[in-house]
Figure 1: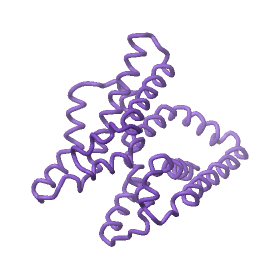
Figure 2: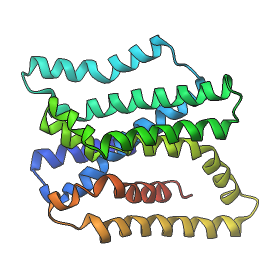
Figure 3: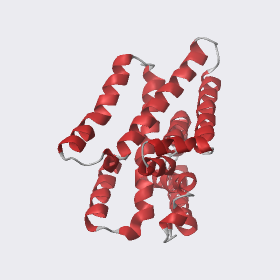
Figure 4: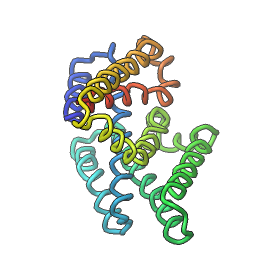
Length: 238
């Protein structure tokens, strides 16, 4: 449902050139990349399937149709810039989960210690690439990719971090929304909904209202998550 509404928004944004919601559309794109890290983390963490078959099937699934469109319509692949973002997010998540899995299986680390170290290493790699001149390597491909990758440089990583916490969030949901205590359930529901709305309002009031995209773009990778978390809190409240 969430993805469907965002796809609808993408189409109308580009078709009608509704540039005044640029910042909101940037959040939607980042939410998509966030889900790449989140969903793939849950898969690898549960299945432990790091096979070549899984890798190849996912690379083909993500890329084959956009590559065909780019070729037959004779348009640059940059037009489908989100595809390289998804591909990179998938590969990064697979490597991170593999490191965590090996730390647990081969070195005997606990689940939380192994996953935390793996995600921490991944964050360090992200910082060393995106926050240093190394990021200019992307200019070898194009200026467009240089911009797009920096706009979502931490999106998939944040999705992975959320995936790690998902079990704890599930425990909270069972406690907060259990039917054995109606008063607590109603109170927590109101607080959760209000907190989600407050986070979305915080993002918009502090950052989302900025009319100049060149001013907003540099801070977007660090702040879009407020809106995403806020929406999840609103969506998941009973």
